Image (cartoon, rainbow, N blue to C red; front, side, top):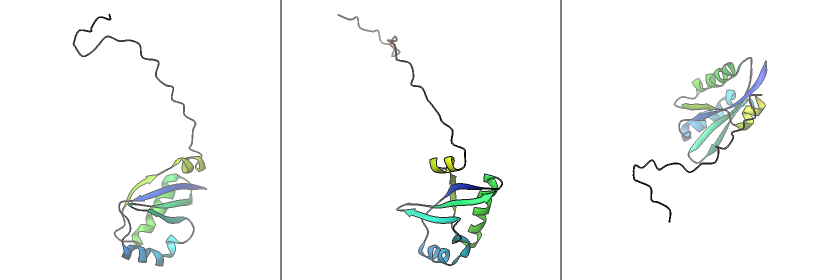
Length: 114
Protein backbone atom coordinates (compact mmCIF):
# COMPACT_ATOMS: atom_id res chain seq x y z
CA UNK A 1 0.00 0.00 0.00
CA UNK A 2 1.07 3.56 -0.63
CA UNK A 3 -0.34 7.05 -0.31
CA UNK A 4 -1.79 8.63 -3.46
CA UNK A 5 -2.24 12.39 -3.88
CA UNK A 6 -4.88 13.98 -6.12
CA UNK A 7 -7.57 16.67 -6.27
CA UNK A 8 -11.31 16.22 -6.73
CA UNK A 9 -12.63 19.31 -8.51
CA UNK A 10 -16.28 20.17 -7.85
CA UNK A 11 -18.84 21.08 -10.48
CA UNK A 12 -19.96 24.09 -8.42
CA UNK A 13 -19.14 25.84 -5.17
CA UNK A 14 -20.77 24.32 -2.11
CA UNK A 15 -24.07 25.82 -1.05
CA UNK A 16 -24.44 27.05 2.52
CA UNK A 17 -26.45 23.91 3.36
CA UNK A 18 -23.82 21.62 1.85
CA UNK A 19 -21.08 23.47 3.71
CA UNK A 20 -22.99 23.01 6.98
CA UNK A 21 -23.47 19.29 6.24
CA UNK A 22 -19.76 18.93 5.39
CA UNK A 23 -18.80 20.42 8.75
CA UNK A 24 -20.71 17.60 10.51
CA UNK A 25 -19.30 14.67 8.51
CA UNK A 26 -16.44 12.89 10.26
CA UNK A 27 -15.43 11.21 7.00
CA UNK A 28 -14.29 14.60 5.68
CA UNK A 29 -12.27 15.45 8.80
CA UNK A 30 -9.79 12.59 9.11
CA UNK A 31 -6.88 14.40 7.46
CA UNK A 32 -7.14 12.54 4.15
CA UNK A 33 -9.47 14.94 2.36
CA UNK A 34 -9.83 18.69 2.80
CA UNK A 35 -11.79 21.38 1.04
CA UNK A 36 -9.97 24.18 -0.77
CA UNK A 37 -11.88 27.12 -2.21
CA UNK A 38 -11.45 30.29 -4.15
CA UNK A 39 -14.19 32.31 -5.86
CA UNK A 40 -15.81 30.15 -8.54
CA UNK A 41 -13.54 27.14 -7.95
CA UNK A 42 -13.77 24.49 -5.22
CA UNK A 43 -11.86 21.25 -4.86
CA UNK A 44 -10.86 18.64 -2.32
CA UNK A 45 -7.17 17.95 -1.77
CA UNK A 46 -6.81 14.22 -1.17
CA UNK A 47 -4.18 11.82 0.15
CA UNK A 48 -5.44 8.24 0.41
CA UNK A 49 -3.65 5.00 1.11
CA UNK A 50 -4.44 2.25 -1.41
CA UNK A 51 -2.84 -0.28 -3.73
CA UNK A 52 -3.70 1.75 -6.84
CA UNK A 53 -4.62 5.31 -7.71
CA UNK A 54 -8.01 4.06 -8.93
CA UNK A 55 -8.74 2.49 -5.53
CA UNK A 56 -7.69 5.69 -3.76
CA UNK A 57 -10.00 7.78 -5.94
CA UNK A 58 -12.89 5.34 -5.38
CA UNK A 59 -12.36 5.58 -1.60
CA UNK A 60 -12.45 9.38 -1.75
CA UNK A 61 -15.53 9.45 -3.99
CA UNK A 62 -17.42 7.06 -1.70
CA UNK A 63 -17.53 9.81 0.94
CA UNK A 64 -19.73 11.99 -1.26
CA UNK A 65 -22.71 9.66 -0.74
CA UNK A 66 -23.20 11.47 2.58
CA UNK A 67 -23.00 14.90 0.92
CA UNK A 68 -26.03 15.11 -1.41
CA UNK A 69 -25.99 17.36 -4.44
CA UNK A 70 -22.21 17.75 -4.58
CA UNK A 71 -20.89 16.71 -7.98
CA UNK A 72 -17.24 15.99 -8.67
CA UNK A 73 -16.39 17.34 -12.12
CA UNK A 74 -12.90 15.88 -12.45
CA UNK A 75 -9.96 14.22 -10.79
CA UNK A 76 -6.77 16.20 -11.27
CA UNK A 77 -3.13 15.51 -10.62
CA UNK A 78 -1.16 18.72 -10.41
CA UNK A 79 2.63 18.86 -10.67
CA UNK A 80 3.02 18.28 -6.92
CA UNK A 81 0.70 15.25 -6.99
CA UNK A 82 2.53 13.83 -10.00
CA UNK A 83 5.82 14.21 -8.16
CA UNK A 84 4.50 12.76 -4.88
CA UNK A 85 2.90 9.84 -6.76
CA UNK A 86 6.18 9.08 -8.54
CA UNK A 87 4.52 9.76 -11.88
CA UNK A 88 6.48 12.89 -12.82
CA UNK A 89 8.82 12.41 -15.73
CA UNK A 90 11.12 14.99 -17.25
CA UNK A 91 9.92 16.13 -20.61
CA UNK A 92 11.77 18.10 -23.19
CA UNK A 93 10.14 19.62 -26.19
CA UNK A 94 12.58 20.86 -28.76
CA UNK A 95 11.73 24.07 -30.60
CA UNK A 96 10.89 23.69 -34.26
CA UNK A 97 13.72 24.27 -36.72
CA UNK A 98 14.06 27.84 -38.02
CA UNK A 99 11.58 28.66 -40.72
CA UNK A 100 13.11 29.02 -44.14
CA UNK A 101 11.79 31.30 -46.81
CA UNK A 102 8.95 29.34 -48.27
CA UNK A 103 6.94 30.10 -51.39
CA UNK A 104 3.73 31.97 -50.75
CA UNK A 105 0.75 29.72 -50.27
CA UNK A 106 -1.86 32.43 -50.74
CA UNK A 107 -2.05 31.83 -54.48
CA UNK A 108 -1.07 35.41 -55.29
CA UNK A 109 2.13 35.88 -57.23
CA UNK A 110 5.01 37.05 -55.11
CA UNK A 111 6.42 40.46 -55.79
CA UNK A 112 9.97 40.60 -56.99
CA UNK A 113 12.43 42.22 -54.63
CA UNK A 114 13.73 45.62 -55.83
